Image (cartoon, rainbow, N blue to C red):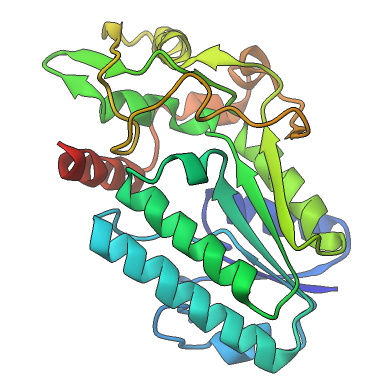
Length: 270
């Protein structure tokens, strides 16, 4: 089966491509680096030609409100148009648990717009809504500094390992489309402040973490369970303490681009 992965060279995309190939599929990693640009349309028709499934795990290069909305709307429209012309039978998109509850955030308004375009398209689809990644906990701390302390919400969340995200998305990609959304998450719930504190401790990072009821998440105020998936979510296997022993945990920070995007979002919200 030919499966095209948009954003196939990123954190999730590269893992997904490898997993699909290990299972015998023709997985194509498509990104601007490989000559496929979903915003301009460059290389898109050729990339999706004869594909059975297209998986979109791409992200906007900027999280400024107008820019991120333009990215997801333009990219998704171009993708769906090319897929329709090529006869693609399944469009899979990676989104975020709680997206519809985070409309205060410009980034999540853009994700809502992306999901709406997919639902209104003629292409059969599955939207995979994932919880946060363990890999980005230090990045969350970095963009949550107030003075010399880390200020984050005390709300619940249920983060997961990026490897488990890729596994779950891969399973969805080779299944039949459900024309709906699937939630995926980690096997354990935590308080955001408590897990950020544990992550920093694992890195011997001395910064103090404050549970701040006024702290925003990507520009939005959280309620207790905004980021928690429903009872029917598909859960990954990797527990946080197990993840800490793996190579992924030895990388101390999120990619700088991710930190910069989050900073843009926080500035916009302030």
